[in-house]
Each structure stands twice: as C-alpha cells, then as structure tokens.
Image 1 (cartoon, rainbow, N blue to C red):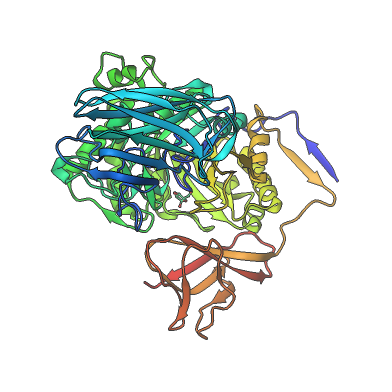
Image 2 (cartoon, rainbow, N blue to C red):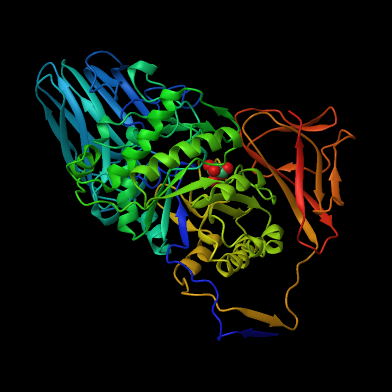
Length: 618
Ligand code: AHR
C-alpha cells in the first residue's frame, strides 16, 4: 500500500515532554525495588496495619533478648520503634525476594543508629543463608547512651542473591539499635540514599520527558491526617510529601495503599533528584482530599483542606523557592540548593466524586495560581475510563478552562486499535490532555503493538494530547498487585517488557512535528471486536449485572445480565479478587482488593464508536 505524506502542510508540534513515566510505589516498586536499601524493615516499624501478621521483627530473625520497643528512649518522635537488646543477641535480616543481592568486589555501606549503657562492640557480617561468609566482618564500637550514627563498609568477596546481614551484640550491656541500613556504594549516579542502578538506568534509557509521581491510588486514599500526636500518629494515611523529606531516620513510615509498608526512604526529594538526573520534568500529584479508588469519601473538614492546600504551596516552595525560604532551606539541607524547576502539579487521581472533587480542585487551583501564576495545574477526568468519555468532569473542566486534564484507561488491545481516533474529535481550544495512565491489558507482544498503534494517534493529536505515560512502571515478580507492568525485576535482575521496548522506541525518537499523511491500498481496517472485553473493579465489594456494549445511538451490541446464575465465561484476569455469581449478578466476594475481570466475546461491529457499560448494583 501507499502512504502519502503531505509535506506542504504541518500537523501538530510534538513537545519534548510528550512521553514520560509514571512511578507509583505499587508492586514493591520503591522499597525492595528502585530504592537501593537492602535491609527490609530497617527501623522496626512494620506492623499489622501494613499487612496481616506483620510486626516490628518482620524481615528479621532474632536470637537472644531483642525486643521491639516504643518508649521515651526512642530515636525520635517519627521513628518510634527501636530494638532493645540485652546482652548477647543476634539479628539477621533477609532482605527482599530471595535475600540481599551483593556483587563480588563491590562495597556496601552499613549504618546503624545506636546507644548503649556500657561500651560494647556490634559485629556486622554478610553471609549466605547457610552461613558462608560473603565479606570480612565489620566491628562497630558503640559508646555512650545517646543516639549516634555508626558506619562501616563491607566489601563482598563473592556474588550472591541470597545474602543475609547479621548484627551481633556480646557482653551484658543494654544496647538500643535503630535504622539498620546497608546500601550498595554503586547506586545510580553514586548518590547517597540512592537508587538501584539497573532499574534507574532502565528508566533513564527510556529518555522520559517527565516523571509523574508518587501515584495513583497511593496518593488519594487513606486518612488525610498528618502523622502527628494530635492525630494519634495515623497509619494508612494518604501520601503526604512532608512525611517523605529530611533525614531518612526522621521520616515516619506508613502503610502503603497496595498492602505493605512504605519507608519513604525514597521520597519527594529523591523523586525530584531522579527527575533531574534523567533530564525529565518532575510532575507531582497531590491528594485532593477526596479519596477515590473505591474509598469514595470527601472531607468536610475545612481546616484539613486548608492545610493540604498550604502543603501544595509549600511543595512548590520546596521545589523552586530560594534557600532563604522555609522549604527551600530544607531542600538545600538535603544537598540541593538550586531549584528543581517545578512547572506542573496535578491535583487528585481518578476522582469518583465529581462534585466534591470539583469544589476542592477550584480551591487548590486558585491558591496555586494566586501565588504561582505560571504553574500548570492538572485537573482530573474521573475514574479509570472503560471506553467512555469521562463526561462529567470533562464538562466542568471545559467550562472552567482548566490547563490540563489527567485521563486514565486500561483496556483490551482491540480497544486501543479501535480507538486510535479518540482525540481527533477533542475540542482544540479546550483543556490539554495528560494521559497519565494507560496500558493494554497484558504483557504480550500484541498488547505492545496495540499500544504503539495507539501512540500514533496521540502524536497526530499532539496539539491536544501533551503528555502520556504507560502504567504501572515497575513490578517486583514476587510482589505483584497489578499487571501488566513496564519493567519487571527481582532482587538482582530486571528486564523490560515488550511495552517497555515500545515506550523506549517512541521516547527516544520524539519527532518535532506530525506531517499529515494518508494511506491507500490494503490498509488495516478496524476489525470486529473479538477477544476479551473487560471491566475494572475496585476495592470495595462490587456487584455487576447488565453488562452492555452499546453504540452511541443505544443499539445494544452485546449484553450479559448473568440472570441464568452462571459466571458465563467471565474470569478474573489479575487474580486478585474473588468473584461469584450470586442472585443473578456477578459479585466480588472479597473486599479491599482490586481486580479486572474479562470475558471472551465476539461483537460484530466494525464501527469503533461503542461503549462498554456495567451497571454497578452495590
Ligand atoms: O496504575 C495502577 C493504578 O491504576 C493506579 O494507582 C490508579 O490510578 C489506577 O487505577
């Protein structure tokens, strides 16, 4: 066939920042992932709120008298647990996946905060699970009963991905230990408290134009209260950036929305630093005080809303303010006196409560614009779109003239192929689009080809679609809450999916401008919808009946009301939820999980203007 390129006219200019990455701490993407710390539960803060059965010694094996303690002898108010060791004891940490990963001849920096009521020596060893030494031991002399940081360096004598770190005390002293840490010296760009090199390099190799962080559902869910005594040090609170900056031993840990503990060792400073290191624009997402992702609650606490709006303003000051400003000073103390050049900030994620969100968004936006008129404020389109149009919030955004709107969708490859023209019809004078999350629902070659085809439609509409990021970015193979994912890893290896290769191809070859083109001959035409149709479901128990695929004129192309009491071929692809057909409806029988269910279907429709709708009855 023939492609004719019209060189006499020009299409949309493609911004350098068109394609970026979306980092969320899902699938253990941070601790045990991009964050290079090798010790799991280094500050003994894990507890049963994080995950069933977890406690202060999760990740550790202890012999002797070693008790996780929270009393007024603690390291500081935000790092409240420590380990109180009396006499001879041994503590062994088994890291993530199969263990700590070490490479022969590489150096590893050990540190611990400690105090002791009598001079004592702490011995630090690196060894395999069966006791084979992997480094010469390091001995740390602890003197004085006030908290001090002690350090040492271990050099690995062999390569292993099943290493253990042991800390041993002897004698009869009472020794208090906290923030036991082991970092490879060889982090990305050699930064202290840095990033795992192979993973950071894989992200850098993409040459992303921006980094959206820190989530997703992670941002907007949980309690909106700060970690403080006034609120009884809440766990399971939303991601609040002030929790995540400053010296790591003063950062409070939190329950991660995805069902584990997050140390915040990888926090806002590190996100900004990483964005700068890879030449990408930082794009933080702040909570809008309306919890989405199945929680669907809005705050009515005006003081809380005010504080969060102030937090957003303070964040801009942290990123851009002079070193004499309150938050610019904190940035400088972290080693970055120069500004990070923040230009864009997003408020909220997948907002299910349009009225409540909109009221809050306007408050955030007007406060930000009043103080920082040149900052782009990204609004939201609503929850994960299953092929619909997000009409409710889009209408508000259009009428208001928002700068940019964040859309998300996870769909079948057929959907991506059939919706290549999605943005052709978008209002050219309306808000710009930030496609903050999208993926075709598997990690097969066909999925990535569908994504590639779809991205040509994004580029053709680059006057409207200004940024796009595949999601999620990272997944630890042993701790998967969501798939597909772009980059997979265990404790010492990482590999890109075919979607990674597609993203890399597009990001490394961002054009300047689209030239209009036409194709004639045996070109691919939209195919009937065959294969999977899918529904994303949320963490609350949900019931679906009356699933329909319809044309815009209402003609029903496919319908399933489960009325016969059979599952009718629907399956739970991501295997995170349990489903049953009860009372003629398809019901999620577990709570606090997220799932996508699909069904193979053939729909005789060559027109790609269809929508899939599920009536949620509970
Ligand atoms: O990317 C995974 C999740 O998908 C994000 O947290 C959320 O925004 C979306 O539903």
